[in-house]
Length: 107
Image (cartoon, rainbow, N blue to C red):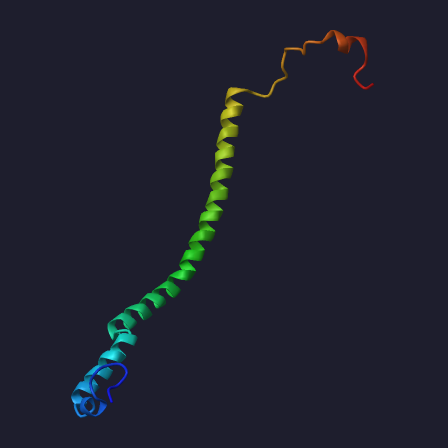
């Protein structure tokens, strides 16, 4: 009676142990990862873990320097504004409308 997966008889196939061992080795190799690939993956994981702390420190430092850059930018703008327009009251008066003259503002 032929086996369900192929037309060859089981007793004939298993008589050739070298073929069976070769088949089992190939089947096992399909489901496994090569050693070199596993080593690379392990090294990659280790490097990522090692780089995690400096990355967080870098992100924190960038956040601090962003705030400092913003403060410095505002300070520089303030100096420029002070040089251009010194603090002084304006000599121009507000134009009064006819309605505001007839009644007080608070009512």
